[in-house]
Image (cartoon, rainbow, N blue to C red; front, side, top):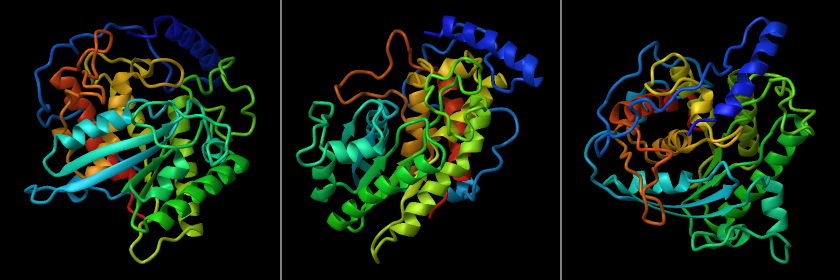
Length: 361
C-alpha cells in the first residue's frame, strides 16, 4: 500500500537537501505498515480530537467551527446538482461527496463531470467546444462543458486548473478561463454557485533532481518543499478567485466564486500525521499514490473538505462507509476502511481547518 521504493528516494534526496539547507521540514521519515487502521465499525466515528494545538492562521477565514457549521434539526431538504470540471485530482471526489451528502437528511446531491487527465481550463474550454477536437471521459456521468454551462441544470459548479500553477502568465490564464466559465454559467443560471478547487504540487517539490515538470521554470515557489509550498501558494489561489470576482461581479441574485482550500486542509492532516497524532500513518507519502495523486485516504480527506463546504454540516458526523457511483465500496483490500479512530482524527482536522481557510466572499 505504501510507496516504499519512492519514499526511499525521498529520504535519500532529503539528506541532500539537509546537507545544503540545514533542515528538512516535511521530508518523509521511514516506511510503516498500516498499523490498526483496518477493521473499524460502521457509520460515522464519534467526535474525537487530534492532539496538539488547534489550527491557527489562514487567510481571512470564518474562524470558529461553531460559527461555520450549521446545527440543529434538518427541517428542509437542499437539492444540489453539481458539475465538476477538472483532471485526475478530481478522481473519486464527486463520488465521496455524493455519498456523504445523501447520507444526511438535509441534502440531495447528484453530479455530472468533464474530467480530462492533466487538462488545464484552457484546454477544457477551447478544445471541447462546438466543433472542437477534444474528447472527454465517456460514461453516464459525463456532460460536455459548453452544453453543461448553457443548460442551467446545475446549482453548483466546481472547477480546478492543472498543476503546476504559478507565475503571472499561469495566473492570467486561469483567471481568463475561469472567468469565461463563470460568465457562461451565470448567463444560463444567475444564481449558480461556483467554486474553484485548490489542489497541491508534486510531493517531490523542492527535492533536487525530482521535478517531474522540467518545463516549470516560472513558478515562484517551485524550489520549496511540499509543505512549505502549500503555505506559500495560498496567496496565489486566493488572488485568482478574488480577481475573477472583481472582473465578473454577480448579479442581484448571484454569488461570488468561492475557493475550496483542499490543499491547505490536506496539509494540516499531514502535520497531524508527522506529529504522530494519527495511528498507522507516519509521513506525507502515506496519503499519496504517487508523486501527485492522493491515495484513497488522501482523497477522502479532500472530499470531506468539499462536502463540509457544500453542506455546512459538521464533518465529524460524516459517514465513512462510502459507496461509489457504481454501487461498490470505496474502500478495498489495498486501501482498507480506516478505523473509527483514524477516521475521527482525519475529520477532526477537517472540522478545525475548513473554517480557518474558507472565507465567504
